[in-house]
Image: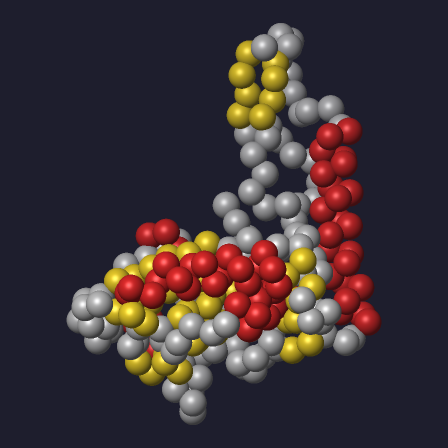
Length: 219
């Protein structure tokens, strides 16, 4: 499972349905959430994707209109469903051409009609979920390193050396942990005497300490 520090929903991204998005009327834009009424160019998308990955992950909603006073979701006009494939391409271009290393993200699309949201037929909302990255810092093609700051809608270029050091150290901690996993002997049960091949499933590389085998097969 990917590492998500915050979710406004009671279900995972893959299980979301249209009515679930109504909760966003009470969720303000900020550290973990960003609303876009329309799609933005790949270079701009790259700022948001890299900022979430550098921080603690987050949710980008395209086709959701923000209330300028409360910063919560005010309306759900969506974007034309016919343009969703093009926006998918823009998202791929954003991370492949404008971020190094590339940012992992997943996409969930909610198609209208969804009466509970006022989302009409022929319009869709795109939900882009970015987990916290273990390969920081993600550097934008402008040469800047972005991160989210409080309720600012635009990512902030990071210049604080202490914060930059923390991003570099996050990658180093993962490297050390993986090296330890490969170097150490597996944890065996007391009655295990036959040779076995172990398969380790590591969904979150921000781990510390020893790992216990989650699956194994006889060799």
